[in-house]
Length: 433
Image: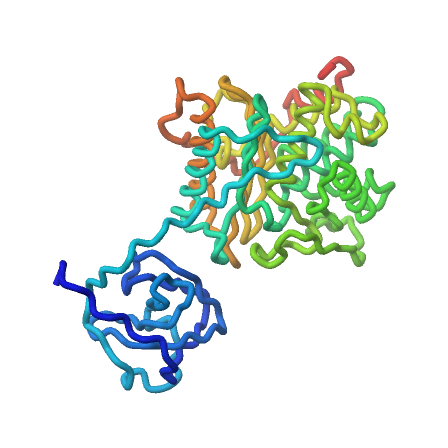
């Protein structure tokens, strides 16, 4: 009965009965699905069972990291070894356990290549904690195989925060930002018609064949060499956890060859990253910051590290073409329609993300968000989370004119840049000067 003293917890001793975990499972503080999770069990884990519940389909297990030394697992999630019903049982439903300490926020101040971030203010820290809670509330928890990463930077103050910074994600099409930068590093004049077309098809329509043409141009005719040169550009900026070593797939014009790869110090298992195309949220944010600083403040590693290979005008062209990328979802849906966003999205079966510079009335900022779920991630689910995060970040920067809800927009069924002014703008001698 409520208010009655709790029964003594079962002693942790060798029961001889075990539960074999068949997949990833939650280990709970009490025997109910809404109880706090105290841990995660993974396939192959072997948990010692202490007692079974007579009224509920749960078993109590020895779990040293729990405050009580024990925890609860749903019976159907375990393969039982031994005689379960030879163990003590309980019918107790009110355990009066000590209150758990809330899970600490994983928000941290990242190290940004080519830039020293400012100290995080209490208000900016509170934004990070809010976004962390949103991510956890949506079920993207780095303690599990379903996880996310995020980077936010205030381009006025220099404050930056991240979580999931140490996770290597598949680069998806977001890696095309690095390809764009490497391509412009080789141009000595504004792009011609064919070059501008390939740039626009890559960054607006995300067409892989056009992307591979850029890689081939960077690599002197070989897209594999081009990919390696893109990685060298990223290295020269200081982005050593990000790389691409292969052209994009499904291109009938490319003869496959054995690519290189590398193993970085980022977590190589959590998000099951592509071994040939990887990124982290912080390094993608740092790349966007490098382009922004070059374009807006005429400073930063693109101008200092490359012996004149980049000009502020070229950086402004990069941001300009990325501003034409309109997909009606993700970060776009979290800001008003008339706010400029220079961004690149990317998604594969198990990983979805978006990386953007938002030019908002209340100040410019960078937002990078990546989400991962093994095998398959539902787009409607991932887009709703990214859109919510985007709106909250926008409202932080624009508190006097906040968005009350995310924008409902239709994701275009196709992309057509014919007739778009972006080609002529990229080619113009005067544009961006």
